[in-house]
Image (cartoon, rainbow, N blue to C red; front, side, top):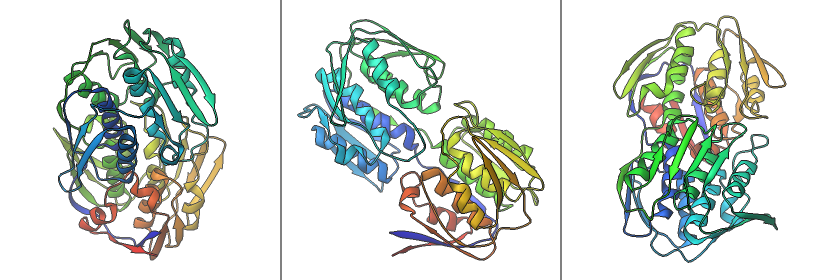
Length: 420
């Protein structure tokens, strides 16, 4: 296992281009299973571990895929799918792989998909997906850890979510494309990645309306055509580097993404005393010499993203006063607080709320990442800590951040990767 060795308390300065969005690339790649003719080209696909995992799932199903980690270009040919089963050995590695259920059901009329794995963030049931497919006329059963869905064509109809579900919205969109009638999704997720997926599918010939709003309508089509599409920049990666600039009192220019997708993050950093300058395809963050405390509540988009909660908490550890962070999206998403305490943070957790009492400084220590975003927050805390820190289990971080140590080094951080 690799680890990061970080000598902290260095200001970050410079310019950085953000890679393509993992959370958009994954469903777009899976969505290409719906294209039965030709070769689809997907650009700006980041070379992450999760991309490799979904590629293996697709190839197991019969798709032919090529990918260049240098150019970040992937080609997918899904003309001949010879398998309707996604096995546990592959599915256990990543929760987003459950997205193959919708395309397989739409293309083949039957899908047998293992219950997924991925980060442990409390209960993240796939009940939303199953209930939605049943509403569309599918027969869904569970046997031996597999979800088995049958039904072709699906009936379309009205689907609703009790709370917005990112992957649930995408899976229903996939399944609805070839249904007998239109499908309306109520309380759909509004994330920019949903919009990206809809743009990709619409370019291929789909008729999807309302993506990015709580109501999405899908009109069925007879088929989709191969396209050439570029994935949007990763707002979560951009937000991580924004907070890295804030916690180190640095100045970092970030490009390659839409700054409007991080409006709430920008507002919270400005509350903390940072200066934000936006442009058409990015922004510049100038950190304050001493950060101010802040109150944050995570919420589905356009609220403050739960995936940046750990990073912002790292910054509040050094704020001049008491901050409050409330987590409303996932349970058990405060595992990083124990590691931040090892660095000298003063954090109290009660239920879904953390109270952070700012300290004058953090001190280097041996810590570990428990999931992708918690790992990123711990790295940021180590960047601000005085002395040497070692961050273990960085394979979690590699699932969502491409060459994070190289990018931070380019901004002036003292961080290296060591294989153990």
